[in-house]
Length: 233
View 1 (cartoon, rainbow, N blue to C red):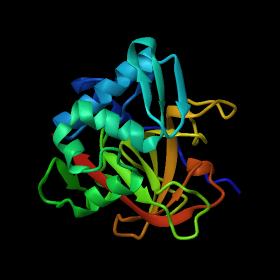
View 2: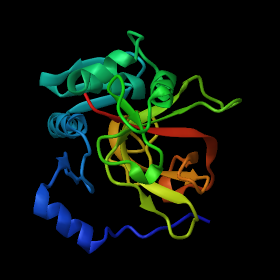
View 3: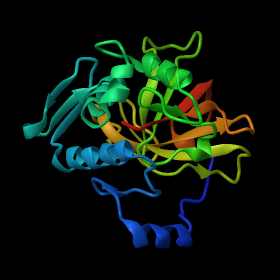
View 4: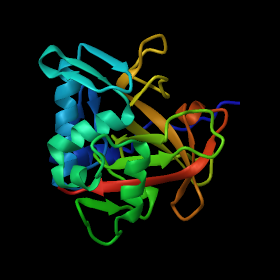
């Protein structure tokens, strides 16, 4: 049976959002307040990209022709390109010229939780994640994929799923060949950059231990450690 959760954002939170600044990424209104200047820059850059995008495709070689609205890349290629332009110190911490998802996971794992170091701060609890933050996981053992894991950016503050104790639905931006729940990409398309919803299970202490690729519609989850980090500069 598909998992279900309420899609309504609390009216109070929406009111508070409109009293400050409405942040949008393309046609998607961001729910929650970015917690660093870099996070806000990330969202503003994505807004520009989604507004002008004419073609996107999932591929492991990064090809960006911004004036033509063409963005061809995978998840780590996209994340590295975004950070280079919004949080250069955080990008430098990823020492490889072409980082992969595993590198993002390890740089978050090494980051302190009380303060930022090298442009990164690791978040203790999934509920602490806010728009513009980064998530990453590594490929679990024996998982049928050549990718080292997955990486992307948080769009909305994580929403608890009442029907599943310790579970959260999180709207995210990533680059993938297979869309998520409520995704901006067509299932029949070529993938690439888009916005969708993932499901995360936690251990009761806010540490994400599994993900559901199709969000609350997932019929199963994949167990692995997922980390959330905040870039500061």
